[in-house]
Figure 1 (cartoon, each protein chain N blue to C red):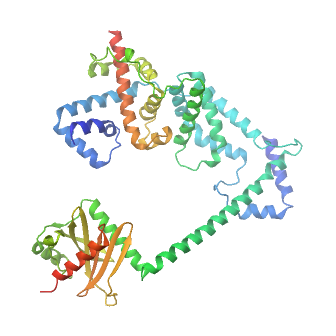
Figure 2: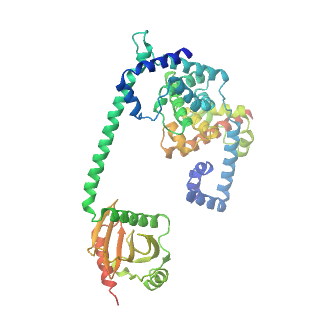
Figure 3: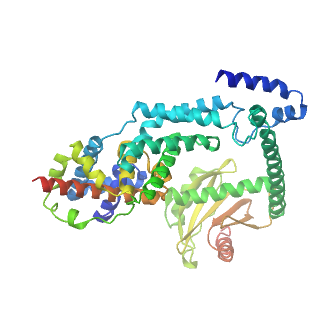
Length: 211
Length: 276
């Protein structure tokens, strides 16, 4: 690294000879308002802006992919992609921006593995019966059982897992969710309601079986 | 708000994502409907419990290290990308940049030129339409804003009455001039009421008339001595503005009804408001 920086300085002196270039550097405000950052500086500002959201990124990928190794690969890939297009990011919501990339990268992998269950129609044999007798109060009793909730969540289609993680765990607003999941704002509430209903059904089905 | 609507909006309400007015309507319904209130409380506890119980997958520390090292690798590779010779990686790093900046410059200049031309076109088109572009345009904007606000904020009238003998004394007491108030119910423009408003740096009277489902705000205030007396119409943002001066009072009628009807309204108003 030190070698690189030194070399760069040396170059700066060399460049002094061609005045036109210097003038251009001096008067033109760059379009993206990014100061002439050295790659090192850019990396540092990227890390400062994006690494705090690593847990959120990992959590989302983990829920989408349901597999630790895939989740890590996707997050790493997403950070690389984000770094490459960081110059184009001028928003204030770094977390939402990063999560959008994580989400898209996750879906790419899901599709590649033919594991996309975006709008999976529910298997009525498993989920359609057996839980009608389970009352909301009973569900509530079991709803704090982390293992049970995890299993029930993992059964849901990806679009439901994603929206539940974004809302319940990251506490994101509907607007942020709409941006990340790339759906109209008006769809967020109804999808969230359906996701919660399905989760309750899955919980009920599991509780019913245990009985 | 009924049970069905409440159920539909329940999640938005629980998440605090509804506008205040809808939230209030739901709260009102929950106070009145035991079943919905129960459903709300159950759903709230459930969401809370599920939220707490859902495992949160924190990133393992080795992932952070992996990412940081891959970013450094990417950064190190970046400058030498598309370089033919390894001997002078430094030149290749800097050289493409001036060209990029040159491009950006010309785009900046083009954008500036486009903006100037665009502004000129707008000024050219809007200028002749308004005799005193600056002042009138500003007033027109204010008038439309007042009109829209009166319909939006549920504050159409301060004194809601179709009786001109109620509205007029109320306004007279609040203002330093006495606007004519007439009811035009028989002519299809019933008087809805009166309101105080603030326009053109002074308190003005607003008379509200209705035409079918549409409302007309008629703003009245004393005319300046140099006020142009010729009536004029302005169409902006889908609103009609009609201006005239009568008995040293300024009249501005603002509505979304068509110009013909607004002219008719003006004529009727003038006929009926002839000083007794």
